[in-house]
Image (cartoon, rainbow, N blue to C red; front, side, top):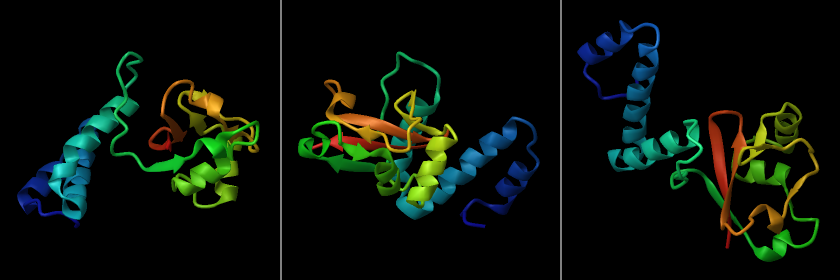
Length: 149
C-alpha cells in the first residue's frame, strides 16, 4: 500500500460500502498525494476539485492546481490558431494525437462547457473573450488550462 495510514484505519476503510466507498477513495488519494507532493498542496487540490466538478454555475473556478500551458497572442492570430489536438497532447490530457482525436470524436473534449466536435478545430484569440485563460476538459474528471501570455 502506498500510504502511511495505520492498518486499523485501512481496515475501517475496507469495511465501507455504498456511497461511503467514495469517501475512502478520497482519503487514500489524499494520503498518496501527500506522500508524493506534500500535504501543503491538498487544500489547493480540494478547492480545484470542488470548483471544477460541482454543478454550481455561479461559483468561480479555481484552476490553480490544474496542468497549465501558455500560448502567445501571435499563435492565436487569424483562423489558424493552435489545434486542440496539440493542446490536449501538450497538457497530457491525451497520450497521442490519435488519442486526442478519439477523445474529440467520442464527444469527451470540451473547451469550458462547450463540446469540441471537429478534430481539426483550433483555439483562437476569440475563444479568450476578455479572459486570460481557458479550460480544456477531457472527459468528466481531467482538465487543464491554456493561459494567454
